[in-house]
Structure formats: C-alpha cells, structure tokens
Image 1 (cartoon, one colour):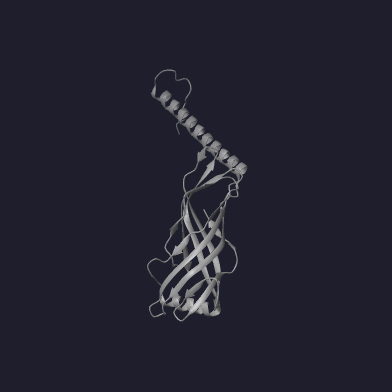
Image 2: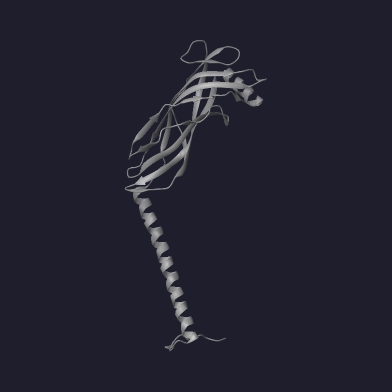
Length: 224
C-alpha cells in the first residue's frame, strides 16, 4: 500500500498540490462544523433566555342566535351565532403578530358556519386581545343524515357540543427581529344547554322553539 508523503514538496509538483487541497478541505470542513455548532449553541441560548410559549386562547361566550334544522330527511342547517374569543400572549420578551385568523364553528368535525376573518393585530408582551365575531352558515349547510340524527338526540338530551375553531398564521417578534409565519390552530369546545321554553336566545329545530346558552367559559387547545 502506497503512503502519501506530503512533506518536502516545495515546487509545483502534483503530490504537493494534492496534499495542499486535502489540508484546505479539512480546514473548510472544520470551519463549517464549528459554524454549525456555534449556530446551534446560539439557538439554545436564545431559547433558554426567551422560553417562547404559544398563545393561549379562551372561549368566553357563545350566543346561539339562530339554529334552524330541517327534518333529517333533508338535513339542512341554518345558524347564526356570536362567539367571544380571547387570546393572551404569555411571553415576557416575545411579541405575536396575527397576520390572519379565521373563526368558524363545527359540529362533530363538520363545519356549520363559514370562516369569519379576524382583524390583523399585534400582541405585545403579556398582552391580551378579545374578538366577538358573528358566525353564520350563509348558504344552508347540508348535514349527513347520521349527524342530523345525532344532533336531534343531543338536543333531546339537553346538551349540544359545538367546537369553535381558529385557523391562522402568526409571526414572533423579538426586539427588531421578526420570524417567518407559523400555522396556528385552536379548538375551543363549547357545551350548549338546550332548554324548552323561555331563554335568552331562540332557536328553531323543525318541531318547535328551543333556547341555547353557553354552559361555561373554556380554555382552547392550541397548536402552533
């Protein structure tokens, strides 16, 4: 096996050039590795100092102003509701830009209102924002027959679980640095009680008038 001798080549010989290239490659690889390790160390230090946390969402109120479901044979749903959603930035050193955020309602995974766009906003450190958008089905929503039956059963039992969903894009701000966009998703479960007779909000479900109200404030599941 031939052993390459990199010493003693002072001229422009091929062996000397090859050894020089190998030394240069080793230096470049070492510098690149050192840069990567330094970048990872800086990211770790920034994370430990800032400790960024995702925004916290809360559903404060849900007023069902109208809920009209035709008999299960057709299963058309018309609804209007107003949701009051609060978002809090729990970070001491990180601000949050809400570039876009849509709010809509779901029943058992099926959207029953069209998305309502929230205004673009910025939350400073420890700030809180509150929105109260109206959510409407606009055109009639066609429920699958099994969901129409399930909704009728829930109403008979006196409780209906509706999910208020938030879907949008956020950016983080640290000093003058602003990050790229991150996808934000929040799910806020709302347990609605159904009362026959008088109440604060009226809803028609084919056979008669019922009244819906929000059971209690609830925290939302947030994913960024």
